[in-house]
Length: 266
Image (cartoon, rainbow, N blue to C red; front, side, top):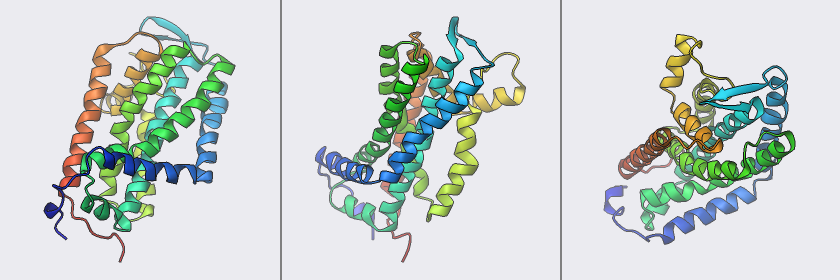
């Protein structure tokens, strides 16, 4: 199969809706996944952050003093973006494994349509988890201001494009679920915790921590999210985060245009 023979065909914006509709059906029928997504905010914020908050009262973030619960809540918030990447990897791996990706491209779904539509599944999961986090934050005082939090959620959906596109990009090189789980466990789970999600990056931090944080894209996304959630609106970090997402989408689109469409299993 030579994909270059049919990838110039396009259904237009309609193809995004078709892909997104399939992803919505997959999302709402996966009861086990919904339960897992519901439990994550309860465990990470309800248990872990609440426990740490007993010893860490306040955090000075860019001149604003916030409670540790408010600081860490946005860290958990960003953690959900990286975990949702596994859903994009899973869904795109299924498409590749059973030849659905080739069928979609043959029927007029362009790579950027595919990326946009496939982001629907992780976006809905992200919104669902943020909704649970919002309720927990309101109960415990972890929300700085609800309007800023909602703006951060909207911006988080934009940043989620980075992680879902990265997940789809990696799925082009992953042939089975074992490799996918290995990638998530050995690489991207450490990335989530290496960024200042639950700890405060300061001048007293070790050189190693500063170096890891400096090369971690989640660090910049996290700073942008916190600047919005706390009403600072740091345009520099916001712009950097948007550019990172745009670059990743363009890179994934370029790879999808050129990848060889074959079944992962025969």
